Length: 132
Image (tube, rainbow, N blue to C red):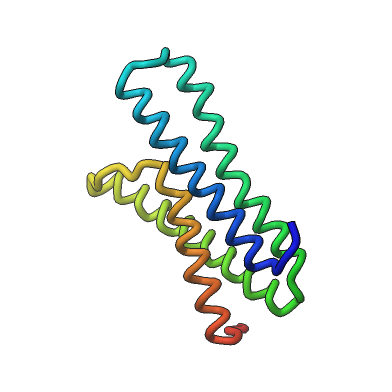
């Protein structure tokens, strides 16, 4: 695929996200309808999981196509996303243990990471750099 790395990354991520969502809804519908046995649903669950790996591969490829400055912004965004995710998950885990907070389904970790990564990358690209 030729073109600008930004456009390529967004296109691949959008297509894989659409596939992830559609396959997730299809599996949910099949589960609720009882149309297929449970062992086929387990096998079908591989499709959305594979779709989650595609944006990670695209991000890896995107990072290596950027110059050092833009790569550092993206890496700061990745680090920010992971930091938010780890702090949120750890804090919520303590809240579940000690104050009877409702359970946070692990399913939400993926979108939380990508939203935090996007917010961090936008922040660091707008602010220039926040070094030290």
